[in-house]
Length: 298
Ligand code: FAD
Image 1: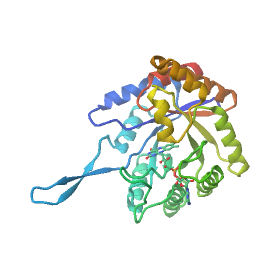
Image 2: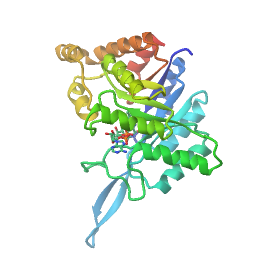
Image 3: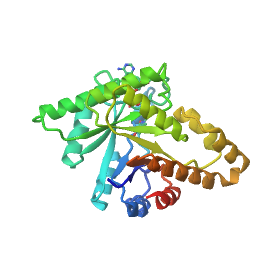
Image 4: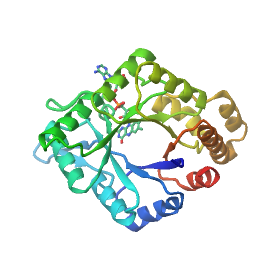
């Protein structure tokens, strides 16, 4: 199969119009992505004081809902498969089932299954009392949902993999053991956390294969866009920025965007030269750098 890109988009903040969202995706369609992933964000709440005393809880949703975004992208670009992310965080088993009914109704065939991070203000992830504690449990629950509906597989399921280890894992071996658990529970493929050194990815794939993980492992990458990210990315995603990239961006902070784009092109070319079939790009709302990478590589 000819190598292809897939793209991740984040539901836009409220106030952005459908035309603006679709207009930002349109130029990417020239490169024939097979999938557009739409991220999922757990609800946040705010407590507001009441005049008579006490507090009431209010839902704070800053973004357009994932379902609305999936439906808009599906309608505008029917040639692309829309892949909603589904997280355990903040969701009961009943709510998850309701999302699955929506996805089935919408003709969605691919889901990326995740645990999600801790709620804002909390140090560790806490599952809902009647929810799921790990992505592997959610994968198994989706397979049970399908079985209860007649047994036919409805969804292709992806899960997340961490070439540099998930930050909560005590060591890389344990992390890979739990990754295998997700695959054994019924996941069909793995998409990786972003990385900036391809050697880290190749090593990860080798360790997964040694551990008996045989499903496709799709590399996820993102161009660096500013010098601030040299500090932020390791903190936010528990990943390393290679010495060479750090030095280059630090020496020319005004050119960080261009340097990051060129680095991403080099990464993509190298991945393709190593026989990778799909590269997953985290777009994070900016697409001119991604367009430049796609033009160069696809
Ligand atoms: P899990 O696979 O459940 O793993 C979490 C931790 O628990 C790991 O350390 C793992 O080793 C450990 N573990 C797993 N199973 C067990 C077990 N049975 N017992 C003990 N320990 C175990 N977050 C969002 O909120 N929304 C998104 O849309 C989103 N999209 C993402 C897309 C990609 C490609 C990636 C890589 C990440 C994404 N994330 C998203 C972030 C993700 O939710 C976090 O990284 C989260 O902290 C872990 O999710 P997971 O699915 O990998 O969790």
